[in-house]
Amino acid sequence: AMSKMKIVIVQCDAKGNVDMVDLKAKAKEHSHDLAAIMITYPSTHGVFEATIKEITKLIHDNGGQVYLDGANMNAQVGLCRPGDMGADVCHLNLHKTFAIPHGGGGPGMGPIGVKSQLAPFLPGHPTIKTGGETPFGTVSAGPWGSPSILPISYAYIEMLGAEGVRKSTQVAILAANYLRMKLKDAYPVL
Image 1 (cartoon, rainbow, N blue to C red):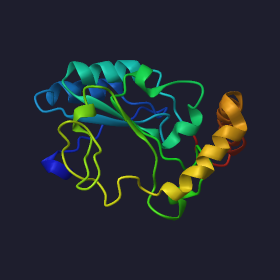
Image 2 (cartoon, rainbow, N blue to C red; image 1 turned 60 degrees about the vertical axis):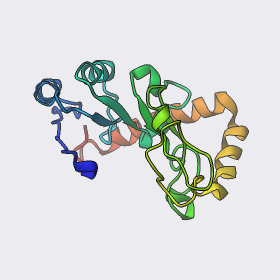
Image 3 (cartoon, helix red, strand yellow; image 1 turned 120 degrees about the horizontal axis):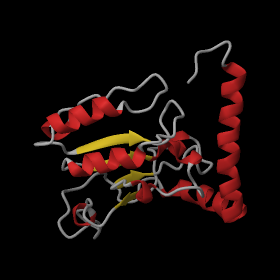
């Protein structure tokens, strides 16, 4: 783990949800030094955590921040917003969700959204004014990642429009559930 932090694994229940009993016990046990939870929503199992707001409240009540992994944002766009779930930080990789290949021919890229309490600490850059008032340093050599892939995502969003993006999300969820049902007898799925 970076910054001398300790990673504490939280168990899942039989249906792929965060085990709330385990999370509550670990949040209480580590409340004196709880920095954050990272949660993928929907999970890698394809589960939309019914207790997502309870999870974020629990972490906040114990002094931590909530990092929502936006890797599966293709199941959220146009339907919900990470900030409404209580996320303090959310990244959005443009692959899967906005029509570019994974990595786009280089490092992955996409926006990182933070709530106001974290904005002062956004990373800076030695040659270009970026970040917050008290940046913690530089994250990468180029402050804009791989900008040559952005026109692909921009065109995708422009061509679909708000309703088309929402419909794309709905079809992605429908397709995932269709495959789950087709595979359920041959392959263990949640």
